[in-house]
Image 1 (tube, one colour):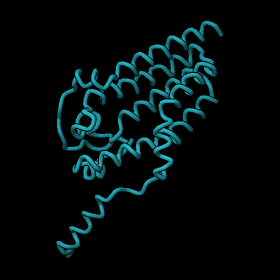
Image 2 (cartoon, rainbow, N blue to C red; image 1 turned 180 degrees about the horizontal axis):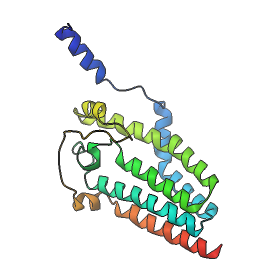
Image 3 (tube, helix red, strand yellow; image 1 turned 45 degrees about the horizontal axis):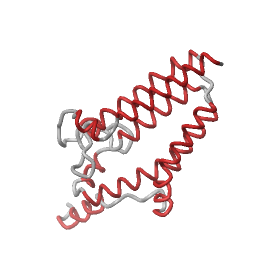
Image 4 (tube, rainbow, N blue to C red; image 1 turned 120 degrees about the vertical axis):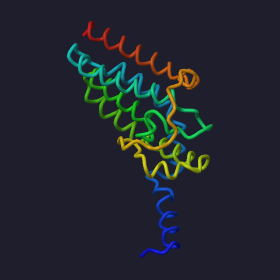
Length: 200
């Protein structure tokens, strides 16, 4: 039978921060490069996309699904004010990043470019994953409940529902987080792909 002291030790070990994948200096640099990298990816997307009607039919619904996930998450996120555990956060720790990944993947499929697929995958691993790591370290510092939440809810793979706050989607939070900019960007990308399809 396990002693209470042993139980306390096990709990402490279970809630300790996980090993980091990226050294902090690199993660900090990647965080600073995230916005410039986004502009580079946008230009690359414009130059390398070679869409066809079939690729649009396959890729755009996937991209729209990722955008919907981002929008749903944005309506539950009060940054630095409270730990988000409702909506998609009840099953995924990072629905905004997952939504970005899905939307990017769908856009790459729609663009019909293997080169873009490699570039976008590299950017996600080398730029966005370090950003996720830094963000989670920040959340551990400002929210005492985050350690337990991180144990119960996986980073990107859906899990059973976390028994946290059960709040409705907030349009005010959606607007405050400026998620409409992602919708505008997606609309521009779709218009560009349709124009390229007609031109090629």
